[in-house]
Length: 174
Picture (cartoon, rainbow, N blue to C red):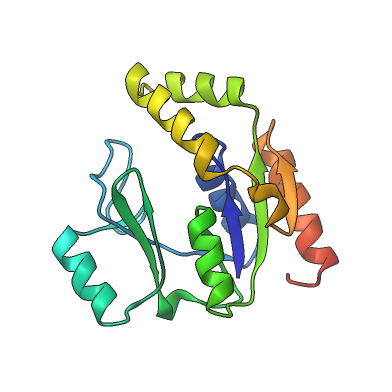
């Protein structure tokens, strides 16, 4: 299973979609309790569920990994764990999958903070929300570079996707 990890606006979802387009990897549609954004589609971006439904699925063992980010819950279904899958996770999700023995190769998508701020502003996020996310990301992602298999600098989506594909081929994953 291929894991993409990175701060807000590092390009994780865009890279995941590009990799799905260029390879046999299939994206995992994770579950979340956060509200849907205007540019997202139910069942494609995420499976958007209530706190109550999340708790019920969690209690029944439906999820293989769970994490919390700024008060919202995120998780991946057990049934979605497969070698031909690609998923975006945060550091907590990475650790959970590793603890559960899932065979993974993980990529940290690195983008300097200034560029991420510009991307967040360009997508129309509120200034206070931008500041909150960047500050939260500093703590959440501190040291994650030492926990992943590879680091990919994302200054260009196509180049970043190509670098990931090359590494997956080198490791005979695809």
